[in-house]
Amino acid sequence: LASVIQKNVVSKVGLTNRGVKSAGFAVLRYTSMVAALLETAFIDTAADAANLGDENSQWAYAEGIARGICEYFGVSYQN
Image (cartoon, rainbow, N blue to C red; front, top):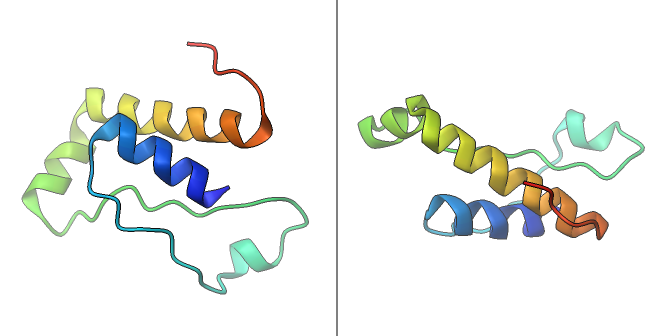
């Protein structure tokens, strides 16, 4: 799931693909369903902070995430 979401977000937002990482976060360990934790950007840089504050960028992230989830589950994305 994380790989498919990552691919779609990178494609939609136009970011560098920094890859998918694994970690033992409780939010992922203690669930009985498929789960992924997504970090969209790091607000420690002015460019990322501006990007996250921009409504068009927020919609691009959201669409990339939605497209990834749809692709993972084999359903078509409805715009």
